[in-house]
Length: 106
Length: 314
Image (tube, rainbow over all chains, first blue to last red; front, side, top):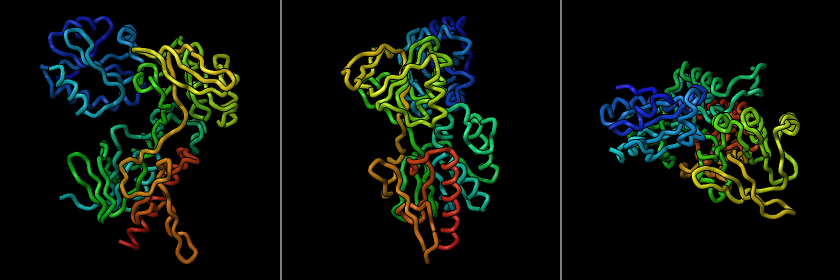
């Protein structure tokens, strides 16, 4: 299962109202480190299939969402459960680190 | 089970990748550890105007992509992982990750340098929440805001100029009464209407709860005072990534020491460390010049030193 691209318009439905935990990756096309995260995000999407939703938000075109969650640096990955932002990881981390955070919300 | 590489290169900035180009063109089996974030400091910069050969300049990430493609073209194997331990106590040298162990007859240490932080209260807590060291990365989030840049060298000038494109006001804070940056960069900054400079000032603390709200400053002849800002970009220098190198001589600041050796009055090795067969290149050693082109130059010399070592001593 691939990641889903979420916008300001779909954020509430896809992330806040999601019945499963959601990992949201805030990124931008001009952000080099964000590109390094792409394969890791794709692997996580495959490995956690139905248990965790993996979403990506392009901050360029979705500034409302970025501002709402106080994004001041990218990549920022936030783990949501029950609509609440529980934990966040700023900057590129290892795949193991993201898995560790995901297991805390499962 | 793995075979022994001729060369293992640690680091994927201009030093490491240039070394890879040279060793693989010399038909040496080359493995390069690129780390989680390959490409070094140039991945986080915008236009590089002073790397020779590019009169129009070249974007940092593009230059690094070119270097990586070039190294891979000639046969350098690149692992996009961090190594966890390096053992130089016996031959062949061992470089380990969490999963595997790799052996090599020679090693080139080129892991460069990382941001030197202020190490003041609040800085670590608010990292990514108003504290940054990369204007090209984060300036976008400070549109219309007032931000501070700390430093006096070219990096600080560059950070400030990039921020002027987004921020409402850029306050440049420096502990001395003049910058050490190149003249051209100083002029661009000092003439910019959005930039204000505060001299002879150090940062005592970063203030704010969930994000940066201000700085506690100390100015000579003025004492302690607070400046309200929404972001702080630290550009005071770099610290070498040398914590994993057991047995390798470092200077008192952690930079890898270089040992020149001569034979019969002629230079034999220029980039050797205290361990024969282990060489060094780039900002992990060079705190004086630290340019992309000097790192690349060092990478080439280290590669040629490794090649000579393999021919004559292994």
